[in-house]
Every structure is written in structure tokens, then in C-alpha cells.
Length: 125
Ligand code: HEC
Image (cartoon, rainbow, N blue to C red):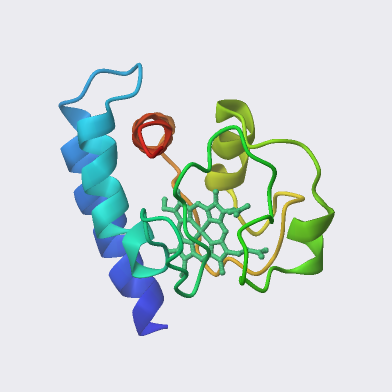
């Protein structure tokens, strides 16, 4: 419960950060959002899995394929590559999207925050 409250507070901060950014996806703002929110569970470095799998080079690759990470069956069963559109749908509602129930995170409700984070993820390669 506390975790949820903290995440909500962080989400509000990130929206404020993203507010000043360009709507087409700003990787600098996205990095700040990543560091505030996603990094609690994900590393941006290759080979480092936390509660969630490493997100290094996630854009364009198949879901559920980071070695040594124990994914949910739903995520392993998802065969379509992580395009920007797929990431956008997943991050809007991680627990409602077909990709899986394991990511205990309520998502990024602001389209601009998602665009920024996806722009940042695109730089991880
Ligand atoms: C509370 C922890 C938590 C937070 C916060 C979180 N995630 Fe996750 N994430 C997970 C877990 C756990 C999984 C594995 C899901 C599964 O196996 O179904 C996951 C999976 C993913 C995947 C699929 C990775 C793959 O290898 O296919 C992506 C992409 C992702 N998260 C992006 C993000 C982004 C971007 C953020 C921040 C906006 C974020 N996550 C925040 C825990 C989290």
C-alpha cells in the first residue's frame, strides 16, 4: 500500500517534469521518469535483473527474452516485438494489457510520459 502511494507521488512529479517537454517524446525527460519510477524495479544496464528484467535494448526485441529472468507465463507467451506502440499500450496499463500480470505497477497514465520513457528506452543499446 505504501509502495503504491510512493509510486503515485512519483508519478505526479514525473508529470510535472514532462510537462515542460516536447510532446513527441523527449529522452532526457524520459530518463528522469525512468530513474524515478522504472528503476525501482528495472536496470537500464545489460545483464542486471532486479524485480523486473533489464530493459537494456528492449525496444525492438521479443518480450520475455532476457536470460536468467523468470517471467510470467503471459509475458513468455507474448510473441510480438516491443515496438513503441506495444510499449505504449503496456505502460498505459501493465496489469490490464495482455502482456502480463507480474509487473506490479499501475502504469503511466499520461501519454506524454509514456512517449518520453519510450524515447529514452530507444537510446538503450
Ligand atoms: C514495481 C516494479 C516495477 C515497476 C515500477 C516497473 N516495472 Fe516493468 N516489469 C516489472 C516486472 C516484475 C516485469 C516482468 C513482467 C512479467 O514477467 O509478466 C516487468 C516487465 C517489463 C517489460 C517487459 C520486459 C521484457 O523483457 O519483455 C517492460 C518493457 C517494462 N517492464 C517496462 C517498464 C517501464 C518503462 C517502467 C517505468 C515506466 C516499468 N516497467 C516499471 C516490474 C516493474
